[in-house]
Length: 247
Ligand SMILES: Nc1ncnc2c1ncn2[C@@H]1O[C@H](COP(=O)(O)OP(=O)(O)OP(=O)(O)O)[C@@H](O)[C@H]1O
Image (cartoon, rainbow, N blue to C red; front, side, top):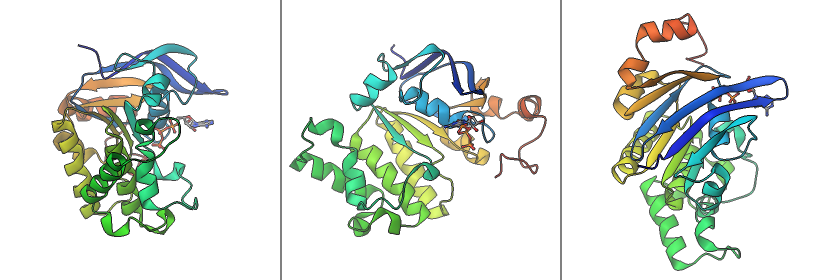
């Protein structure tokens, strides 16, 4: 079976900063994988590497058998970025953000057709954003903004989804909406790699988990990866202690 995501011996530096150190991992299709690690452990860099957005020093990335950049251009992989990485002052309506998910389906001239508008309307409805569709994205709350980017990923209809902290700064209602959507996407056979600092959620949401600290410390069933001894060995501390797991 072709892996949904395959990362083989990848190293990434930003100047002198080593962000990923010989990372290898493979995800089967139709799974939700939690990506865990402290601040600065390389989670966002791993996403950007899979998307072909940062150059690697060594190693190889494959998304459904293609290299990351080709997979992104073919619309096979969708991305929900961390809120900090988005320019919220950019004057664009919620509906337009979600429509960006359709660009890969539109061809070079980016002219939306009825099928694109319907996909956008459906994604807005599924994320409870229909009433806010014509608002500027910057005029939404944090949880609503997250949902707008999840809606963009749904409208894209990508087989592989990368979600960078989709639960950070969202209230319980938005969190429940997003969890429900992620489970629905998995039922539809999508593969999801989801970074989160909310360790309590991982056993119920995720089929497997990866513990990253520049390199892969552990990868397997959530209960194994979250074993106190594994965390203690990796970080010298338990989650819940005053540390950067809990921000
Ligand atoms: N554009 C950049 N230029 C220089 N260094 C960077 C850049 N982006 C990230 N880094 C560094 O690379 C390392 C990994 O950062 P990354 O953002 O991937 O971590 P993260 O696990 O996503 O962190 P967080 O949980 O805080 O979001 C950190 O040391 C960070 O300071």
